[in-house]
Image 1 (cartoon, one colour):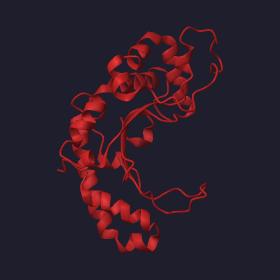
Image 2 (spheres, one colour):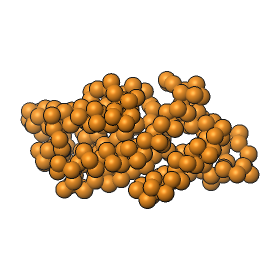
Image 3 (cartoon, rainbow, N blue to C red):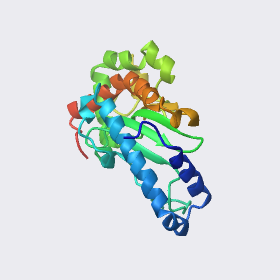
Length: 229
């Protein structure tokens, strides 16, 4: 089982970025099969390691977690047929259930890890805000923890609302908590770490530090009647 991301995958993605067309992809189909298999093996290991502190993802499979390399170009001006990255979202029930999870993004020069829920659909966002409103102290303990802030810099605050969301009092003491539209933290991964034996330790260190956020978000989704789409 792979203990790191192999350099073959990085090289393949670099070549794909230069030749993002169906003819090249099919001519190099065996290369894709090899790097995809290696990535699946690494994600299988990562799932087992994460499950030691988050048993909710114990039975998730790599195939449920890894995104397809084909791009959805129906509504995009960019008609390139393939993604030039490989990603996996390890979440209870797999990536399609839309719960909080652990993300690994492999892209030459732009790799990163993330934990949480990015652009949650309306029902998930409603459930999370309801739980924050019900127990703001618990949410505050997660996102204002000094170690959490030191490691991640806090929650991503892009697309944050400028005012209170509809249905909540504007003068509520913790209204800033409800203005988030994304509940996610990220951390970059340099290429040296990505292809080294230290990768798993690097990932697990961050994933475990963000586990309280993961636990809060999925509890909110389950507690407030938004278990499935």
